[in-house]
Amino acid sequence: MTRVELSRRLSAVIPNAALEVVALPEVPRIRLALLQESYPQHLLDSDTVVSIMNTPMYWAFCWASGQVLARFIMDNPQYVKGRRVLDFGAGSGVVAVAAAIAGAKAVVVCDTDPLALLACACNAELNDVVLECAPSLDGYSGEIDTILASDVLYDRANLAWLQVFLDRAPSVLVADSRIRNFGAENYRLLSASSGYTFPDLDESQEFRQVKVYLGSRS
Ligand SMILES: C[S@@+](CC[C@H](N)C(=O)[O-])C[C@H]1O[C@@H](n2cnc3c(N)ncnc32)[C@H](O)[C@@H]1O
Image (cartoon, rainbow, N blue to C red; front, side, top):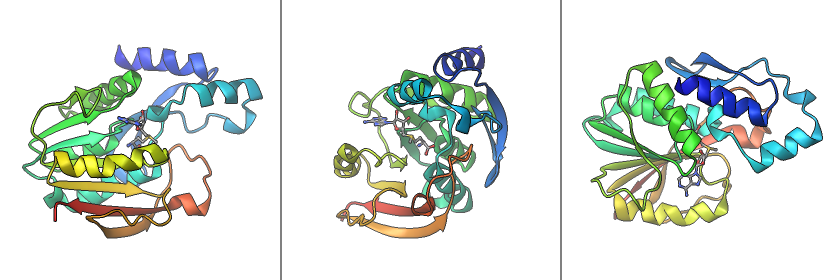
């Protein structure tokens, strides 16, 4: 039912687009309902491109930073195991699903887009994990040990969240490919690797270099 509703909302913005369930290329243990890989993005007319810009369907993609952070968490479960984690700007919920599989005690997905929360519910079911939904970090009052955030810094206004994350949780994992000189106080580089958005948006090489940072209270 959730997936049918998501498909309906997707095709209302991108004509004839459908969702398909795929195993993530870099994290095949995770299955997500995403925009079909074969969708002919190059054939989109200008009206449709404007419509997509006005109603971005972020949740229909697994962003490069999301795929890299999910892989990082699966390879390094100690960052989430036994912890209460919150995935900020969850989109499809890829990182939250990875945290749940890696042994987090409880996982909350937070996204301002109600459709993203619906996508998270759909993808939780596909992966047989439990995710709690929160429409905003401010409105969520539960205890959080670790905040996870991937590809949320495309909007420079979100840089201010880096400090808020540390006010809310003792540790933070951020994955990003958008900010060239990150330099945020109390964050240090943990890893750098290449990754890509799925389905592939043919982003420039620059946006395929994903860095994972650990934030902790000093
Ligand atoms: C580019 S997507 C990344 C999705 C996912 N983390 C991934 O890596 O695939 C960014 C997501 O952040 C959400 N977002 C942006 N600003 C937000 C905010 N202030 N609070 C919560 N979610 C936010 C958007 O709605 C969108 O779903």
